[in-house]
Amino acid sequence: QVQLVESGGGLVQPGGSLRLSCAASTSIFSINAAGWYRQAPGKERELVAAISSGSMTNYADSVKGRFTISRDNAKITVYLQMNNLKPEDTAVYYCNADIQQAPYSSSWNYWGQGTQVTVSS
Image (cartoon, rainbow, N blue to C red; front, side):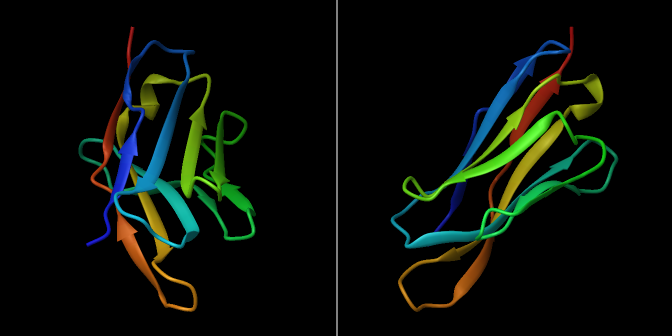
């Protein structure tokens, strides 16, 4: 059973930076479209950033200019670089991705377990 595993969360002061990583727990062929979502206490889960299989990106207005989503196809990993973090960025961040386990196979959508990001002084 494939699982997505996020890492890189933690506690950071306002203005600081973190880089989140998302990778599969077992050997896979590729990660196609992927996205990072976040959910703060009492709020709905929201899309933060997304990247297509061709590396086209889009961002929530609240993070434009501060966050960058990227992918390393060789490592089959998706990243979220977060700069100039603000207290309102505090949330659990989730990775979501369409995973292709073998060449010519169908892609299936998976969620990670989430990683906590806390921005506080």
